[in-house]
Length: 340
Ligand code: ADE
Ligand code: ZN
Image (cartoon, rainbow, N blue to C red; front, side):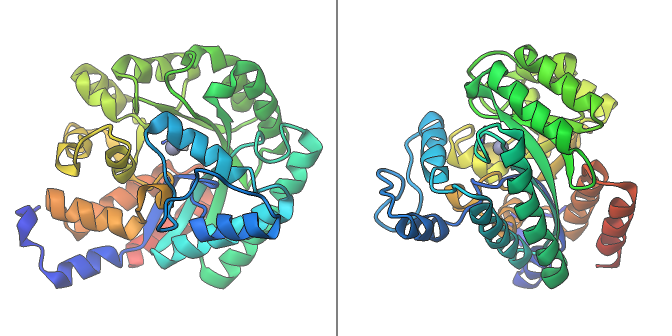
């Protein structure tokens, strides 16, 4: 590690060019605004209040962000739309040097929780992902996600879709949405169903609520990864527990700063969590909503915390080891990271 100001342009360039692994990416949240605008025009749908004058997404705060996200998502109405979205998202990922990504996909948005429709959406996305892998060498896996503010009964439908389609491509189950609604334990039934189907588990926790929420996620849902989890830093015994249990935090620094969880990156706890032994990884969450990319995240972290190539390589390996993929896929991924 070096003094944050010391990065010369050459070392920054090398850091930005490193191969990356992204574990926390919402597929709709990764939709480029121009893609959503284009689709809205094709379908002659008016999208009020979604875009700012400069064409980027616009929202006031976290709850309004979720509403804007859902409004933008409303133009995605068919398996073909999701296939095109998958391609657009993977092109963006590949341009940022991402070689493996996992994306959250929600049956609520893909067929409204109907299993037959869900299978069609998945088939279309998987075909697009396979083509992207052939064309750009990027691998994608899907994590089926329930939406917390839609409630536990709706989540059960998502869990059933997840359980019925678990396999080489759908490898995980998770939960996003408004952390201030309900409790983690309300969703235990859905997480149990997913676990029994062989899916790996993650949930958003400790983004908006404090450390107790992270403890609840570990205790009540038995997750092995936590989406964000950053507010665990407010309870060091919890950080030690996370380290001991080998739980991986899907940290999205740019998202946290843009949404106001922390006022600036230098106040973000990623460095402290890592120093205390928690497994931290780097992701973008919903990149165009937060004016971010993986390259931008790397650059900002390098400049703010003085992280060097070795730090990012170690974090990418941590991500590969925590990836919800088969042993073969992981081995291939680690080889690519090592040979870079
Ligand atoms: N869905 C998309 N982005 C999210 C975030 N940052 N937190 C919770 N749910 C989300
Ligand atoms: Zn998220």
